[in-house]
Length: 581
Image (cartoon, rainbow, N blue to C red; front, side):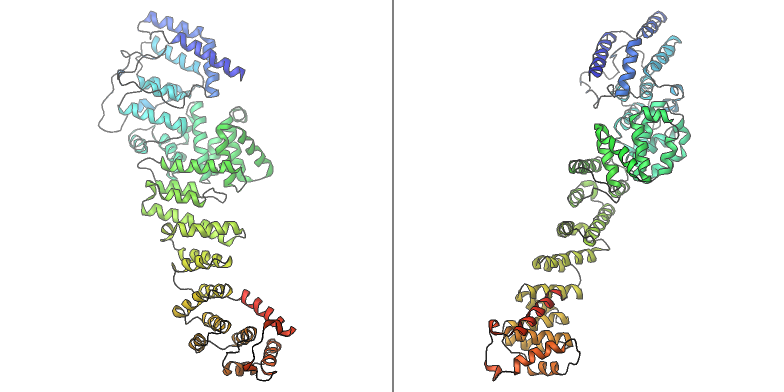
């Protein structure tokens, strides 16, 4: 911390002295400027260290006063005065001259001293430097905000492009993708930056374009090459383009990677694709680096590894912010698909619901993509063993019906939600969800079984009106009529009951357990004809109870008076009710 404070103090002191110097206008002035440059060794060392620390890259561009002149003003020594700046050249389209993006003169730049020497040489030889020239020189050594200030307030195409490029390199933002596309179409050096802009938007079209421009990448000044790799590789990692990532990293030595925190992080990110505890440990070390904390957590989660809940919330917020900031003209669907995919993704139901409300998500194809993501997540949770996850999925189905409506798996997902609701005894939820899908025999049977278990005989009556063709519905309705001693209801449903062996046994056991004995004789006759050994003990027990006493039809039997064997029948009946579809 002490060294950083000393560094800042030194920078402030040196910048204060240099702020009052005039740009050289004559050969003598140029000589004095050159001599001053040679004497400012400490200043250059401060600046080089500050670049490495990120202290000379302010987060926001200084606001331009409304009263300020449109020409660039001289902020400190080395900046060109308005009289030195060439007038903006008007162009018919977004085309800019190749010279603006030709970085060959800066290919060996890596320090602030390189910039100072270059500028002194240009001035000494009488070459007139434009704001764009100086801006690109600053960009080449990683001073993106300084480069932007050189063209601040200028609206010619060169200046607009440089401002957009510096923003892209500084924080990965792409406010105007169309400008990058237009310039790439007419400038031989524009493709490398268009590929980086597309990758920053997670647009896979940037992958092939970058692969085609690897030679341009390799000729970039060192700091630009590091920054380009640092921006491109995280996007390539999300897209599972490991080979291209390795090609980018191949331009750096092991020592260069060790010295650069960003390169070390990208190396660890790529290595995670091979798995292993040691590689995970190396990646987790970057959780302690504030500016890399979120990116590290995102990589860990993509590999299905746990991270703190606070980091997950932070990543959800970042994703929403990224979608909101997608520029006009960008491929929203491609970007969204890459953001959401991955086995350990953070795309929870609340986040998907919030995404669905954003203006950028209202395009039909984009909503279809969002629906596919939601459907995959829901099905995964319903098929898993985590009941809390299934509960969250059930709630999400009800809340996101509009997103799921056009999905091919809609009916299956809603049925899964309804079945889960039935499993936990939420009959009203199960009924409401069932109304959104075509009738399913299995689901209808489960609804009837749940209504019977919960003694919701009103719901069971409703089912007999709408699903009288379902044998489980009619069987359970007949059992409910017996339990409630409702002879009229029994008479109404009896003709639709299929008297197979399991149904007959269920009916007579229910009749015995209730003590009402209201089943018609035809059911008992069917029971007497059953010969399967598995059922005979149960049947014989009920028949003995029914016919083993005088005038059984006139006698009411209380459960407390039923012999021990009838208690066993009742227990078996209850077990049967719980297991039945």
